[in-house]
Image (spheres, rainbow, N blue to C red):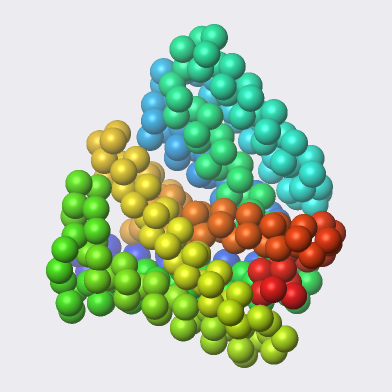
Length: 278
């Protein structure tokens, strides 16, 4: 147990250092990290759902297109990446309809591909992107930490007992409140001109989505009878185990920021700034 705890701490520190360094530098460094996360998620998803074993042809197609999406992200061509994701999704639907491939194939395509795109798009290469990623991280971490402690302290009705018996409704509410506070603090400290109402509302939405992402991954693992998504991270399980809440929060942040940007008439405006109502 001591050796496992030591391994968990060391690998956690190394991972945190890599993620924070890439987030700080942004640009190619963070796009490379985003691409890698997307590819690793697809690897874990295809292993969990049996795609590797049961549908090798579909899996090869999935890998080829996921590689194309990752390359487009590296080249900062997010229009290509989104186009490739849409094309792959349609191809995956074709596999389901014409060849009887599992419906988990197109679901995994979107889950993995959109993760890399959303992460890289939110961070971008400017200062507003850095602030936006810090905002997302703060909201997700505050949600996870306070949901756990509030749930343990207060208890009460379960949130989704058939999916994750340990989670409580009190914990979910505590996590959401702490996320709003954490997100508002990030906006106050780093983005003086931010619209506070927008920032608080976005923090709440991301917190809810983060908790939904956590439940979603728990559902997937229960559905396929696995404890961890993989053993890629020593002492921590897999990548999906560590970023389940972050994935859904990034999906929501990407869609909200894109919507805000388009409403303001600036499709080319930084998504990071749009997330704060700027």
